Image (cartoon, rainbow over all chains, first blue to last red):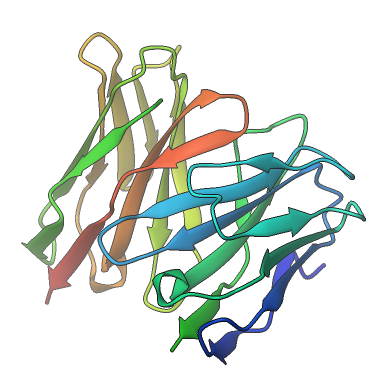
Amino acid sequence: NAGVTQTPKFRVLKTGQSMTLLCAQDMNHEYMYWYRQDPGMGLRLIHYSVGEGTTAKGEVPDGYNVSRLKKQNFLLGLESAAPSQTSVYFCASGLLVRTDTQYFGPGTRLTVL
Amino acid sequence: GENVEQHPSTLSVQEGDSAVIKCTYSDSASNYFPWYKQELGKRPQLIIDIRSNVGEKKDQRIAVTLNKTAKHFSLHITETQPEDSAVYFCAASNIRNKLVFGAGTILRVKS
């Protein structure tokens, strides 16, 4: 049982490049989330999903897209990376029954030059 | 929407002393308040949580109190140890499954 995993762990992009971050969970959780963490600003919700095939915007969705084609995977895409998207990205998942508790992945450190 | 403020931003205590971190929230409909601990380079991990029908909850050296009237909640760590050094985040949930986090508190326990 690996819990929540994220790939890649680190990535450096040039401005304008695109990339996809992958989150996978093996706990059969219905809910999945993408956050970004910046110094002094805590964790801010980018997008989330309440089930396979569904997505919704969070607090800071601009510049990002997501997809949840399979229940266990939640993808975060950057179509045209900007330096302002330099951050640490965390994925999290949660159960339907106890929906408040979220389990976090190990994070992806992204640098956009 | 919900807004969560957390104080202090940094806290240094001597080993064995107590540490208190405070958070205020804006939405009176919020009903779930978790605390996460994040060690350097690691993922946030839930350490304790409280729901709005409870005023206080304790788990060994960690306790959380909630004052719904004043819209604030606090984390108390007693007999601090060096391994308590980390960043602590409070959060509040007013809509099912959506957490709003505070900015975090860096706790340093000096031995």
